[in-house]
Length: 223
Image 1 (cartoon, helix red, strand yellow):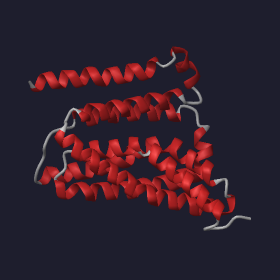
Image 2 (cartoon, one colour; image 1 turned 60 degrees about the horizontal axis):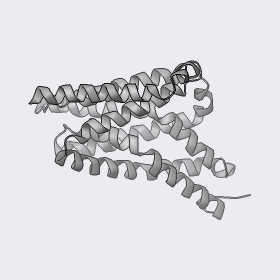
Image 3 (cartoon, helix red, strand yellow; image 1 turned 90 degrees about the vertical axis):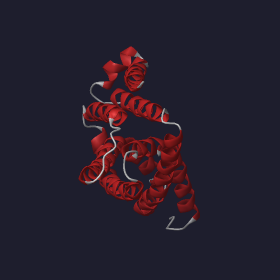
């Protein structure tokens, strides 16, 4: 039987790392948007605390992942919540200082943890599926994968923040990607997804279009 640090274990860990790279994009975008208004000295701290909380959430999710996936309306409600967060981050661009900056810091951490809670179910299920190829070391693989994903997500978020500073329009693209992810979650819901599938891929188009229109309106107000 394959044990920790065996060839099978490293092969499974490699698969998990590939999944981390593929699936962490949405999380990096979310963190970058949530932290974009913080003071530079607070950004990394908020990312670190938010990601640490997200890892704890993902560990808990992994324990109940299979059961949660079968709960009706869960992904539909999660999709609505993520769409709301995408819109909130799109318009949350007020620079705050002093006492208000502390509130913004806590708000950024809360947004990161809540949104990661909403977005993590599919990621955790994918990771658990790969880890199950070495069932005796499932938890060591999952924990290693989660710990390694933290610097990947934080590094991606830091890079996105630099890009957003130079090209602010990226903020609208990030919100659009989160809206697209929200629509996909709703389509995968066990209770309502089958009915939403009747409109094909239009739900994603509608959600992204709403973000695009609101983004254009916001830009015109600034001019």
